[in-house]
Image 1 (tube, rainbow, N blue to C red):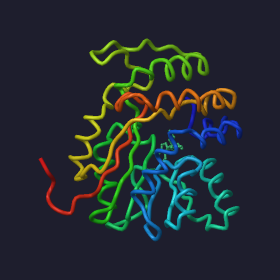
Image 2 (cartoon, rainbow, N blue to C red):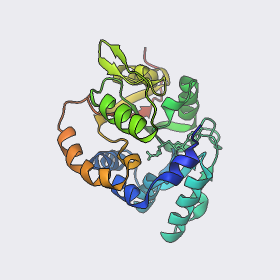
Image 3 (cartoon, rainbow, N blue to C red):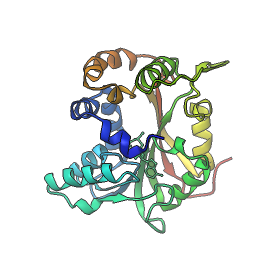
Image 4 (cartoon, rainbow, N blue to C red):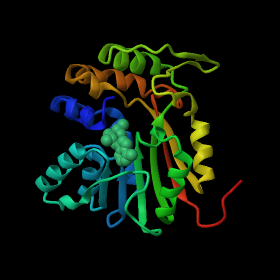
Length: 255
Ligand SMILES: C[S@@+](CC[C@H](N)C(=O)[O-])C[C@H]1O[C@@H](n2cnc3c(N)ncnc32)[C@H](O)[C@@H]1O
């Protein structure tokens, strides 16, 4: 099975650079700017190469990245050093139980990670425990309601790159990928319910087209910004991924 380290190793530098310029990243950066201010302590769980750790750190946020891939963490450490920041802000470890205790964090971001855990309700509850009351969380998961998942994820990423075919399932929402087995569950309403259960109050949610272009390589990445500009104009809930920003409630959970 392909490991996260392998996936990180395979990414071409030009594709990584292009990935960081995606229009959807502007949405995420803007959301981060609304959620966190200088001096906040924010943990990026499953940070990958840490682009958002660097982004936050550049704005004076005390950002720390945690990833299970030693290769990704080492890349982030080098980038931190180059930016004159402490490389100890990059940690290797399991995001299901981050090495923090108490309600000590102002923020958590986890982009493209929660959906990989079968016990995601328990994992999310653990993350929320680490937040101070009123602390903010930013999550990104796949979107089962997006019409484009089939084309971009199933055809492009899995059939062309991995030469593997898994027939999608036909559902009332349309075709849903079954590549990972978790796709069907992740709708905007499922995510909202999960977060409510975990004691979060929604601040904002939307869907965007941020996806597999990085894995398709630099050429596709160059073509992608045009595609993405068209796609981000489409109605909410149609993007490839769902973004949820919430706040830890200080009082009892709402029903
Ligand atoms: C889809 S990538 C997203 C990377 C980054 N957050 C981004 O948005 O570009 C998922 C990341 O989670 C990391 N990861 C997977 N399982 C993990 C775990 N149990 N604990 C911590 N990180 C994990 C992978 O190495 C990978 O960097």
